[in-house]
Length: 199
Image (cartoon, rainbow, N blue to C red; front, side, top):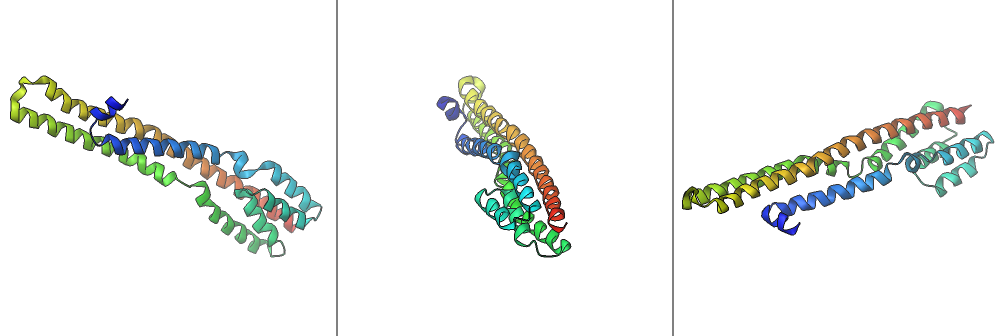
């Protein structure tokens, strides 16, 4: 592995950093964007049952004890339960907007890695070809082993850039879509709670 990295030239170092960062973000988002962790259906049902029994204080305490994206939005709605329906919906929407960065965390960085990895690979390709043509201009084509070093560097960095970028782009799109679905579900559940509070 170290020999492979060495043959790829100096640009393999930033490519290695990109691959480690991308893997860390993918694993972190896989853990953080689980629907059970974000929405906490058990908490939601318990809050609804407490509100049906007009136990506002207990519902607030429950939301504070079990923090989640959904819990914080529910808490904002419950704290302002005495407001009008439209004002309460606005409060819920504002609370939801404040939680969106939590769901989108690190996705911008993952998208950047997906974009720059092929460019780093391409830059390595250019350096490898420059090295190859330098050998040709100095020694001619009679030294295939030296020519192979430059071509090898060019191909290794290109391959490494693509191997990093393709999964990063796939997971970036997947997690972006998943975050959007979770936001829609949170909005739906929040409006149901508003309706329950105003009944």
